[in-house]
Length: 288
Image (tube, rainbow, N blue to C red; front, side, top):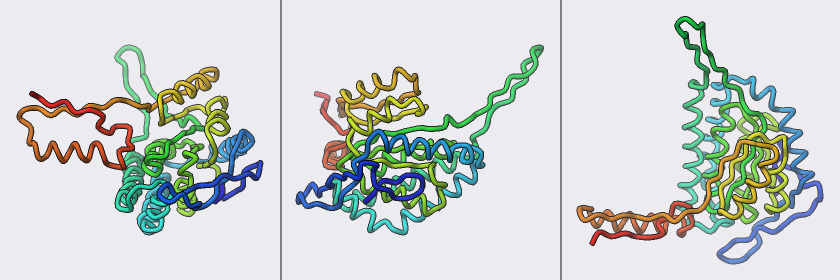
């Protein structure tokens, strides 16, 4: 597998690769390019070329394109799910549900396309007040390994439907599904440069993205310590920053609860996705 830059698969500038392994067997599934700062620069240049035309594209036209991508995901669900399971380790049924979730997230944001407009308000005695909504331009997302497809959808949907370009860095253990989904978006008609996906470790790729002044908005999902590092690297350029970090989530069971439903909820809340979700139940509080 290669990186997705400017609408096509490419090797990294260094031509180096790393192994992607099946967590159940340890077997090598594929290799992915070892990206770095030079690859980030190439991706940002590609986005700069694409940005003006994509921003000028009508939101409804963007939505039509993303709807087509949803159709392709559903048509190729079986193969994508097997790829996701092989690199991430979740049961095949959960992999299918996650990919359908990716599709549903895009559909949701496509449905918001017609609402992307400013306001024009008359102020008595003072004329008018109006707002104009413009894309930020180059946005970026750093995502984790636990739900790579779904979290990609969460980042990609709002960025693209509002006319931004997106640079995505997958987790090093699960880049293959993200690269495959990027290729499907390209097949659906997404212009080259609007979405770029660079694989590689955080210290090489993630840090280069976080500190780059051309990135106007960065969204990070991951652990708290890494989030602190991302915030520190982003601060000098004053880029807009969203951090979704770890927590310690409790489940409360009150005396009037339906206990069978509570038990089922606790099992799902703790063990769904092998327990690897940021909102998984960490503690149970039971009313005495």
